[in-house]
Image (cartoon, rainbow, N blue to C red):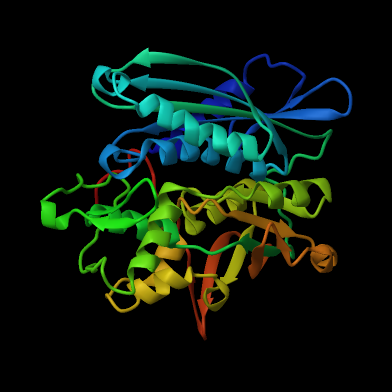
Length: 366
């Protein structure tokens, strides 16, 4: 049983119990939808970040961790077509971390992103943990009544789009595992010469064959990939536009990987999909650095995860209404929802099944 199997079990147990009539959509989506008085629905999401599973302390400056803790929840709210309004955060810190300036830097990064979108921190909790940092982020958003975009409402013929580019965060993780670091001023430095390394990531990425020299022209590209992993940009603007203008028929954020998240949409919509490999917007820095190192950029884009881009579907008659860019972020058309079950990918004349191969907690070793 993996995390998704257990979540499905909990969802069935919840549905068999008495529930509030104000719960429009509960377990199983990017966020829950609760009917609010008047003409608004509440969107509520929570995300857990655990040291050595979701981040490495030695590789993540506290301000960037504060940013990411909030960004991943903003991304869930965006995937529901909603606007973030309020936030809560609970954090468990080892005593030695509490006694330094970690907490001040963490919240500086947190508040910088919150202020960017006018979101107010309204509560949370602080506790002492034994040896690892644990963060629980909650964000509450709003959407017009009935306007939340779900994973389960894609229809055959809908066109599939993604925002931004893919694969950058996964490549950034590989760099971190090789010892690359970004300092407080976002300057890349290498700790390889200092003999400082990171433990093997539970995300499963392997850095074999990935070598670099921070003094070369590749340093800027390396820095950008590190920041795709450490400082993701949630597509809040795109989420608001797609929800407010009723353009998206379904939506999910790409946190586990395109292959896994598209399968989530198709599974919950009882549909299939066909996507074009050549249309997938692979991060140019990934192509530049990985393509020459026997690392497959397409594989990183399909399965890497943590890009926190939006994957959404649009009815054919509404495609022309899509803006070209929102907040300077473009979109790419990558495929179509199909009536038959199963997700497939085509490359030239070859078509194969696209199985979910993104990150899973508690995945059984092969």
